[in-house]
Image (tube, rainbow, N blue to C red; front, side, top):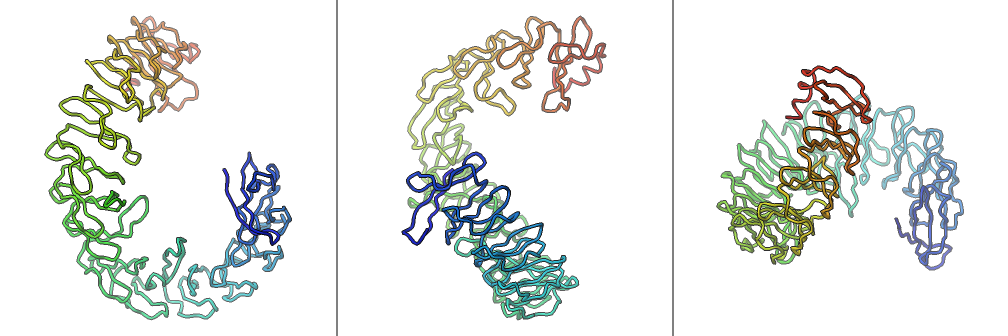
Amino acid sequence: MLLISCSKIDNNTPKQYVRIMGKGSWGYNDEKGNVIIPLGKYKFLNPLDEKGMILAELNNKHGYIDIHENIIVPFDYDDINLFSQDLACVKKDNKYGFVDRNGKIVIPIQFEDETYFQKTGLALVEKNKLYGFINKQGKEIIPIIYQNANEGTVDSLVSLNKKGKWAIFDSFGKQKSDFIYDEIALTNINIDGESESTFWKNGLILVRKNKQIAYLDKNLKEVIPFGKYNNGERFNTNRIAIVSKNHKYGIIDEFGKERVKLEYDTIEHPEESYHESEIFVAKKGSNLVLLDEHGKKIYDKIKDFSFDYCRINKKIEKIYHVQDLNGKYGAVDTKGKLIIPVIYDEFQDFESNYNAIVKYKGKFGLINSDNRTTYPIENESIYSVNRKDLDYYVIKRNNKYGVIDKNLKPILNFDFQDLSPCFYDTKNRFIAKQNDKFGVIDRAGKIIIPFEYSEMSNWVEYGPGENYHFVTKDSKHGLITREGKTVIPVIYNSLFYDSDKIIILSKNGKYGVVTIQNKQIIPFAYEKIYLEPSLFSKKKETEFYVLKNGKYSIINDKNEVIKSDISKNEVENKFSYYYN
């Protein structure tokens, strides 16, 4: 891993340095590859900061050095943080304090948790399990006497808790409210791409008291008084919030105006790509309504919706798939304009591609974002392996399969009874079927494995891995490689795969066990072999239940008898679920 850092060193012109990682150590080279800080010494080196200092770990201690390995903050500490407001929090003997950029301890090591100085010039500290705030000189601006405390990273306000109630203070230590609140909410805000926390910069401060809510402005004036709403959420980055009263939901702005009337059964932010979306989805009865990030209606009277991206006017734009109350699908843009009519039985995602798979009147085809049919809607099926990295479509038409590329040009003609991309090479190989026989071909149609098998496995979750196919020919079973080379001859009456070390085979009424390399583990000497699949077995030693000369016993993988005279009922009851 190479990470590039820039810094002014020795007042010369800026030089470029490359942070390098070795086995358990870090170092630095210059832009020409010359070693500046060799590997093998420092367990960790951070990138150069804006003052040319490097956080480093040496012999399980932490400090700061410059690019020439001059020690600036000595390696005396069990941990050390990045500088904030030109002070860094250090840890020693499970206590915390602060050093400056000269390595001098400017705030004694005495606190019980790590902390940082925020833009307000304050740091939240804990001592004797109580909380308060200090300034950069270590002076207690708010005494360390409170049961709990919170701070906004971009606010001039902090909150403190005394005897279970919260109050608001400013960054100069002045108390701005009484200790009357059960909650004073912090919320997230994005500033210049950085996630920060705030009490009021999103709009208003949400407070709770005696099971009621109110909203305050930055001067702590009640803009929305207690009792007006039963419940409410924090204001979001668009300066609006969801509120409810008498089980009806709406949206208000920072002036108390109802952007969305309280007429919905629920309003919430839907999940989008594993995070909460800025838009809203409201529900009234069985109908859903999409609202944009400002509370403006996008589309209504729908049953369901989902997020997607497609190419509109050569740009990738967000759209919403919508399903109407009759189960039909279409799409709208973020302004609510209907771009795909709500007429389709199925409508798969564009995923930033030019085309999407649709089903209409029982047939499949492709459309673009203008709803123009780009591939005829007259096929029994269409699918793609990976829409995000689209390469081709597999199509079934008139009971024959073929393949077209993402530009809708033919790759494989409609000559096959079946086509499945090989798991181990989905771009270039397919398991194909012709004349009721399976084989493997590449995307140019070249035969890799001849069409001679009545069955051929693709990868399955607990299958033989990416190098093999289980195959059946003339009702016999075996194993071949991805190039068609025989591993286990196709001569066995039955084959049960448990793991690469255990494959149970039968031939001429006798059972045995081999590995995936066809190495014999248990000889073919038994009338039956049962095995509890390794997925479910909790036993350390593999045990096989075997039948020989009409008697059941248990053997290990060395063919040694562990227990004999097992009753027939015990074996059949135990394994009836797994085997016929």
